[in-house]
Length: 408
Image 1 (cartoon, rainbow, N blue to C red):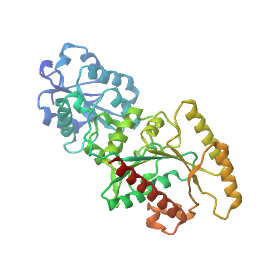
Image 2 (image 1 turned 90 degrees about the vertical axis):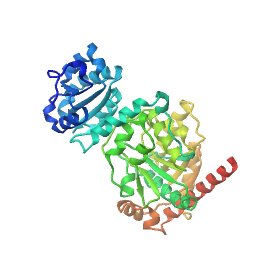
Image 3 (image 1 turned 45 degrees about the vertical axis):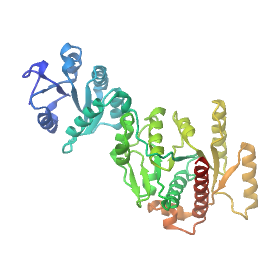
Image 4 (image 1 turned 180 degrees about the horizontal axis):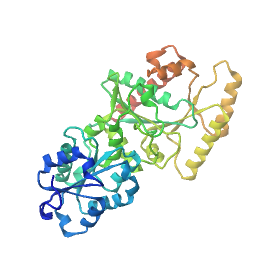
């Protein structure tokens, strides 16, 4: 292995930084293969001092290896990354058992990529090549996405209270649209933006993967390949971006990063359904502005009415238009329930809203379908909730088709 004591500093183009490099044997082997004798190793304190010297200008690449034992030195590690970023040095994090939150903070500080440890075969070399390729592109080109020529319709679903069936509605709406779009060769995706308790993957029996977090951590360099590699498909029809595999803060992404993800989805799909977290966050307005329609779901109870009133007041206080909002009443009264229908009418009048659709109670079949990871159309075709969602999806699909024809 090369070290700063054995190689002249001027000849070093790459360097590893670690508390103890001998705990990362696979990294040593890969660095020898990629950089041969032109690399060295420093501790974090040595690196911070070295980056202030003139010799640091010769560095082109840093592999920063760390694990959960390094979390107590986060401030020092951040300062190393920020200094290296200011010098334009390419950086890859080699992380073992590091929490996603800390990993995200270090990527925000200026690191360009990360690779899990133990290193997968060829992963470090692939990362080095990717960073070299990105550096060769003009700065403006790195921000340009290659659209597919589509300008997809975006529907966001926001449950105003827990248990009102927001995710169930989003999943079944997405599936019905994907079935309708199949004949016209159109495509549909669903994005699970509930980073803490998103259940789209559960409702479709799809495993969550680390690729989702990798995508969300690096939206600035996201391209079509990275976007599609982080998605999965259900029954070869519906593309799904699940929630990350770990519970993450809802402010993990900035409004600009959320905008990039939605813009990429809109460019690649004809219909994009977004399952929102129940909490209003600093990027909720971003989704609202980009959505064609924003579905707010509530039930015929006091908590839903209070939450809806709070949200309406908040939107008005911030001067945000409610034109895109469509309120959906979940577990709506049956046709013969006159007193329930009267209560629903009074609720709408007191809130100053109307309900775009009244969804009936689907009963235990809904829970069973979700537990089996199946849409209602695949599990209970006679269910009244399925019939109403199917009818609503068809109306949205036909309205979108009509709008497309008018635009032409």
